[in-house]
Image (cartoon, rainbow, N blue to C red; front, side, top):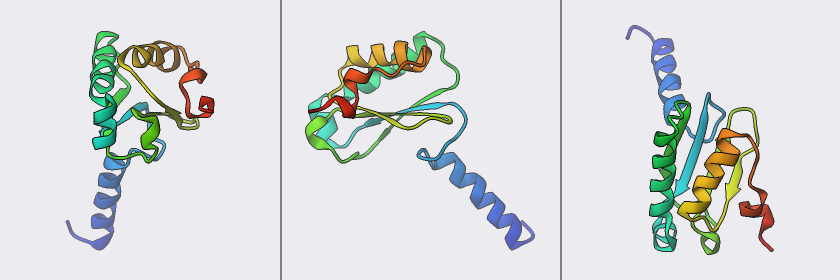
Amino acid sequence: MKSLMELAKIREEAMKKVDIRNDREGTRIVVGMATCGISAGARPVLMAAVEEVRTRNLQEIVVSQTGCIGICRLEPLVEVYKQGEEKVTYVEMTADKMKRVIAEHIVNGKVVNEYTIGSVK
């Protein structure tokens, strides 16, 4: 490293790798795994997402976990970030619902509206 500009470039590249909330290539499935999510059943949801992505060999999909998303009464929560599209927040998820979200939303591009935060009354 020979200059501050070079250091700034390294920092920018590193930030792109860890910032899951900005548009990046591919699709990200983020499962809320704070204590509220875990106690509501987020672990099987996360495992179902990982398994389904692996089984379907979906190369451009990243499954990750995060802390509290902030709507504890609607846990388990899953956020889907698809490049160039609005974030979609799924609520009260189960492993079976996660499999359907991957089949319909991730693979076929159709949001499963009845599982989204907008469907909660």
